[in-house]
Structure formats: C-alpha cells, structure tokens
Length: 140
Length: 145
Image (cartoon, rainbow over all chains, first blue to last red; front, side, top):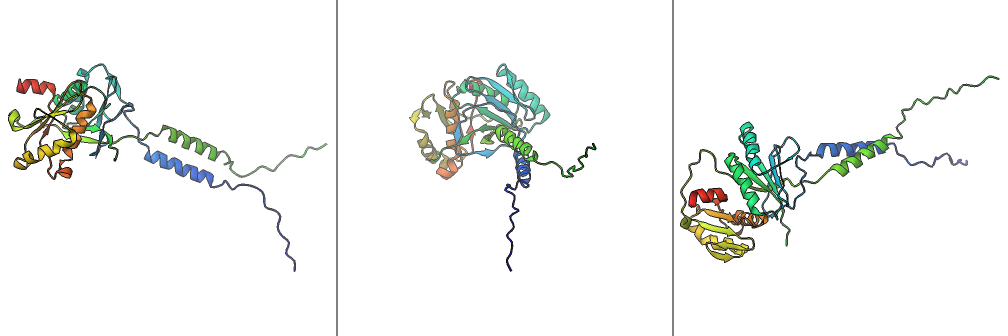
C-alpha cells in the first residue's frame, strides 16, 4: 500500500513562545534592577579591599570639578552649594537614623582639600561609618 | 441582490504584537540598567562616647601623603615599602597608632591607596593594623598646634 505524503506544512516560524521568553526576561530585569540614588559620573579610586555597602546608605559625591551632591539614600542626589551644607545635611540624616552609614563617592583626582572638609563635616555630624566607594584594583 | 454577511469572526486573542511590546520593554530595561559600584573601603569614625586619647607624635607612625609620593616618619618612602617599615614597630606594639595625613593638594586617590595598603596588613605582613587614624586638618590644628 502506498502512503500519501502530506504536503500541508505551512512555511511559518513558530513564535508562540516568544512572548513567554520576552516576559521572562522582563521579569528578570525588573527583579534585578536597582534604582541608583546617585548617578554622578566619577573616576573612582581603586582598592584591593572592598566591602559591600549597605543598602539605603546616604551618599556624598564629589566630582572632578569639586561639585558636591548629597542623598539620604531614599531620593535622587541633589547638588549643594558648598561643604558647609554637607554638615547640615549629615546632621539632619544622623538625627533621623544615628547608625546611618555614609558613602563617599569621590573622583580619585579631586584635591584632598575638599575631601578633608567633607570628612570633617561627617565627623562633626557624628557619622559612625564612612564607606569610600571604590573600584577593584586591576590584577597585575 | 442579497449581500452575504461575513460571519467568520475569529475567536482568538490577537497576540501577534505581544512579543513586540515585550521586546520594547526589554530594550528599555537594558538601556536604563547601569552597572553600579556597590563596594568600597570602610573606616569607622570615633563614637561620641569615646574619650579622646592624647597621642604624642613620637608614639605613632606618621604617614604624610604628598601630591607625589609619601613621607613616613620624615623619610620618603614607596607605597609598597610602608608595611615592611611598619612590621617591626607593630610587632612591638600592635596598637601603635598609624596616622595618615594628606596634603590638601594631593589627589584623593593617593590617600585611598595608602589606606588600602594599610588595610592589607594582615594579608601581606601577617599583622592587622588596628589603629589607623585619618585626622582632618581641623583636628590636627586643634589637637597638635
């Protein structure tokens, strides 16, 4: 007996599962995304020792040009006119949460004079821990 | 003439554009995602109830970070030699204060490199440097002058 070959294959690419894959990727991105409170672009110093910075830490960032931005960790960072304002910001933040960690995100080329004043303001505000944000040292 | 009504209404939900929307969202997330640095070097500041101790300069190791290079206890030194210099002193007194003072014109990165080197004491010379101090200019002026 001769079987008749079926010729009814439609020339289509099966795309039924494409949306499933796409939504899976969307869910992955949505779960892993972290909203940065500080998007200041700086050239971070490099260190071999690095510790994980606690979430919700307050940020003080200093750019190469000396612009200072602050964020309590809950809102986007905003520029402040001078170092004196860092003290009032840190005092307010510490008054709300005395154990609040602070992150110093500064450009590695910025003169230490500015950093010294920022650290001094944080010390005066009774900040307990400062994290110096850094990049991993390049392995030689 | 009787016009025949088209009754072939599809009962399927149109999903052909769903993949387009999904990929649009993926592209949005991919573009807006930024890889952030979430690690850094920590240093604790003295607590409010800590009684300030009088430290004589002679009792401590004084590292002065210059715009170019370092001066340790008055002697120019390479960064990689600092721990070897500290080792015998810390063996005699593990709590010996190491004071890092940075020139106002020196780049911030230089101070961080010194601090990073000191924090690697346990790994490189087998002694953890417990007493690292980074006084600010105001503190130096008010305590020492």
